[in-house]
Image 1 (cartoon, rainbow over the protein chains, first blue to last red):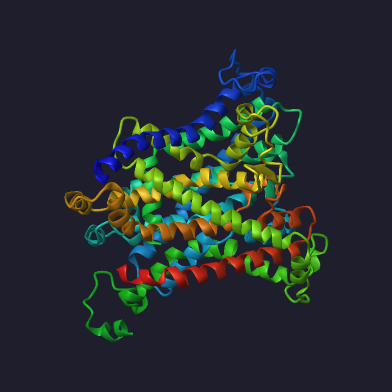
Image 2: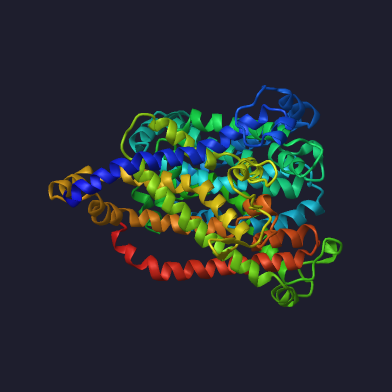
Length: 281
Length: 321
């Protein structure tokens, strides 16, 4: 048997094993999460090893959404995520266009600044922002949090959009200019319609950051329960003994499901936008 | 300059530029106007706070006296000497480094294996791929809580498979095959690798799919075995993306807060610097010391980056167009 045939044979056996293993370690925890969320806590304590519940219950979801206030938390998370996306796009579209098309003073420096912000440790920023928000009384308000998320996502979204805007043929824009479009209306009528996939990708990226973020939410909102996000709510309630684990698992499902749905609805766009944006950085 | 000199010859525009500005000047102004919202928000929410953090690190600032600490307050190195002599600081720095290096290396290695395994089509690839991306997409709070539950010594599923329960997240040391191992630290590293290998996978797969197929085919014709093709054809083309991933993952993991905080709260030998920073800030209300630690962390990060770029990025410059 030659080395080539041996290796090919080995790989033919190994590859499915590796794939099965990877599938197991990623899918199983989430399967476990869902299974735990639909069973009774007594049953879990008695038979921790069983995966399939004897009886399914949705009481856990009713409990977590109404009694534990996750409906409010969902509302807060939605407000934060949607406004972050809207403002991020509003700010980064002109910015990305400028970087992609216009020669202006300091264009290179802007580039460096954005890379630095992208890599910048959040824990360093957390301190002055915590102090500032305490001083001006913005702690507990969602606006401060939205501002932070926008600042954290804008550099990346400018980057992602810029890469896309550069692929829009300049001649189309020139034609629009000759037809009497101003710069802004050229962006609005020509560049944006051609860049829908990139806009989707950047919007989703901003949504993911805002929905999943934890540190700043913890720092700014922890004292006001009615403004907790879902992430914060789950982390704060996870420590308490009164709420059964199964109920909190239902909370985890509630927290995870929206972002997973949004992600898979548009996965290809998002991954292309992200990897293309970062590789050139 | 040249644009101004050429102005008299410039063709008459349909709409003459206001106040006699050249097209080039107009473009520059438009560019600055369009970029300014982005600049203002990064300036206000990132750059200015950073400067303020540096100032706070050199002042005796606590939450009680914060209003009295001004720009012209008195500056001192006390925070730094205090922070560095405090027990636990250096061990947390070592923890951070171990956690970061191991987490980065593991997530990239697993990501590479995953990308190679999922490169060719097979039935169910979309499903497997989707499943692999979930740990990365899911909110950190949910997955950390999920791991906590799975590893719980009383009712966690993992411990029901073991002969005797292990307190993965609360036990600092344990014995494994006669060796002393840091149980909790290894667990948070495993979590890090599990959560971020999809990130490496995405980047490496994107690069793999952009590789020209002819090279690989030529190697097959030349009789190269799969490992030889991997070693001599595929890997040389992946080094750049792997180097980039190492930097990105290192930077993000080194200053990461939420993963360790949520899993162990910094207990059982897993305290990393960012968690210390948080504790100094919120439970001790010591802003100055907290800022000083954050700055030390950032400085170490920059030092590592500079060393890295010196030694590893030098050879890359030629293949960058």
